[in-house]
Image 1 (cartoon, rainbow, N blue to C red):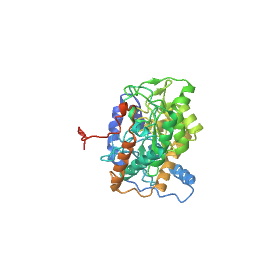
Image 2: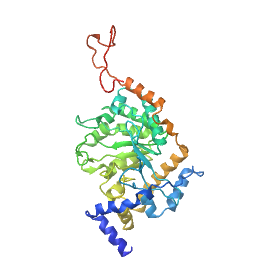
Image 3: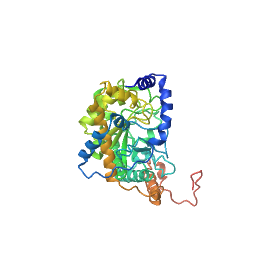
Image 4: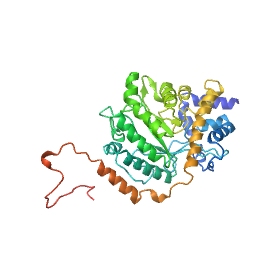
Length: 382
């Protein structure tokens, strides 16, 4: 290693150097998001093509596959670097548990309302509509659905999930993923035990193994086994004292081992990755939205033998495989006209109507009848 390069890495690895590192990344933002030619659908066996591409990569190119490339969105998308030399486009991610979060898009009722329909087929149609709009906006990954178990009454994002029952969450989440992946890669989130907002970055969720497997994981397992999502996102919180992105028990043993998950695991944004070696060894594949831990530090860890080359190769293999599958299965994006289309507006109205739940009908007040007139008041009255 050249002395200057060694000094640069040292400065970037200390605590004070994190801000410097962010600034150094800024000049790379636009080049990282340039349009590389998409890899064509592989003519060879997919696994052989993946192995060929991974085998042609340098260590630096492999590590580039394992982190995002900017601190803010480009055209409303979060991206990972392109590999122009190998013709391998980066991932383009967009948020959207209730609609594509990229400019104007169809807004659907929240997950809790959709859960109240008790209609998996309707939810599959919602997933397909969101996936189609995401693809039309240039995304390859839709960061949805949220399938966390609602346990804390003050969880500020409770409306994103389908409810409290693992069976119901699993059925609805499976349906959404099956629909969304007609057009994009779905990213199921947040694994695991995420059910509070204001302390989500530091809260430690404590539970025994039985509680974990009977309450917090069954719906994730069902979605992984039945819908085969291309991606899973880890949660911010710690689980029994260990960050979810550093839990080998959660990611390596259960998700990838027991359940046979074949996709890639990405962290939640910014504070979802807290280390290099523990996270890489646990089975985290991509740090988002940039490379504070999975860039220079990961390269250095591999060069020093603290992270085996095989760990990086396995992560990159998963990422590249999903990229090639996406190009193979979705060679042509939908037209922009599908965004906020009449069909999707009709669907969101249908879901809203189906989500109404009547808990008590006192004195037979509903359905309305024998009314001479009815006043509808408010900004949404139209």
